[in-house]
Amino acid sequence: MRYLYSVYSDAARIAMQSILAHKLRAFLTLIGIIIGVAAVVVVGASVSGLNTYVTDRVAKLLGANHFMIARIASSKQLSDDEFEQMNRRNKRLNWDDYEWVKEHCAACSEVGVEIGNQTDLKQDGIEFPGAIVFGVTSNMLEIEDKTIVDGRFISPDEVTRSALVCVLGGDIKEKFFPNGDAIGRTLKVRGLPMRVVGVEEKRGAFFGDSLDRHIYIPATTHLQIFGRNGLQIHGKAPARENFQPTIEDARLTMRNKHRLKGNEEDDFGLVNVEELNNQIDQFTGSIAAVVVPITLITLVVGGIVVMNIMLVSVTERTFEIGLRKAVGATRKQILMQFLIESGMLCAFGGVMGLLVAWGVVTLITALAGITMTITIGYILLAIIVSSVIGIVSGIYPAFKAARLDPIIALTKTT
Image 1 (tube, rainbow, N blue to C red):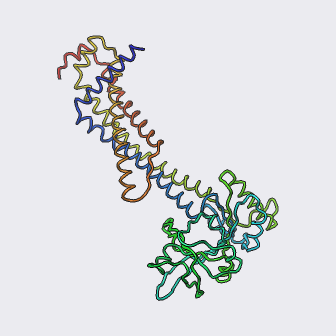
Image 2: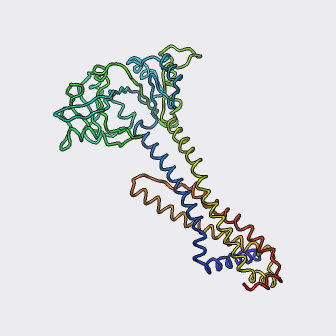
Image 3: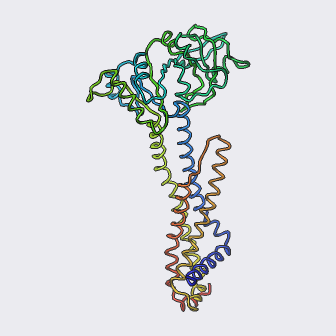
């Protein structure tokens, strides 16, 4: 054991001395490895950041452990034929459906209603086109995990009596009440004066659509103003581990309400947050599967440069190799010396590449405000690939050095 330690430590020491003796050449050799490792880690951080960003936006939009039942709804892109089939088969949901699910879905912690319509707002010479007016039940605050920064959300009593009250999104509040408290003020929706009772926390945009252009009014008031089209039933599971059983309970409850037989397809659409998150994972995974191998090509190019420099190093050190073999160094020891040297070169390049990647990710996060996460998986991938490339790149030069005839090598003085 002591002998093996001595052999490998001597080989590592000689390799380190060789690298330090040619610092500039070693650094220039490693540029390809540094760029390759940094590219892999930054791309991985970007994919992970994109996944986190979209997942957080979905959570802000829909809430956690949340599902929705609607006349036409799907977590995937529907083809024209699928849409036509659903359009012919599926029934319009009514208030009776909501009350039935609320009463019979034992696994659901909350069941609510949401109906959305777009309208233009105009008051006191101020216009706000394309506002989304949502009619909701009071528990949509808990179902979609909304945050109210001023005032309160709509109460159950206001839903029961179809009160003319509203909760404003951040953009609408700033447009109509920029310099003061909006609570208690009046905003006209379709000509009806709505008393403002709350303001929602700003949520930003989701795929280019602002989530702060929303107004929430009681669902019963919305039905009277806009009609009965587009009613959606929203439900929430008590915990993540109960999510799938809760969805199945709600689905079975709706099938019973519509008197569907066992072999008949659902005549409603059902979407849940988990399916959307899985699709996001698949989407970002597909991006990573395409982009990461492309960035790994940079590491391969860097490995070719390392191999070229190691061949030059063997040529330069022919006399040294011959001298070592003349005093008893074996082929294995010469081989290990050059393999360790190439491996150490690429390992240094990997560490420097990680530092560069950390700097780039920190800079982008600070300037662009996008959270990019360096994951351990991409760090290990970059380090392992760079080390393997270093060893593979050193194999041929190492074998060439190990096969040198000591007598011929000693005749080479340059």
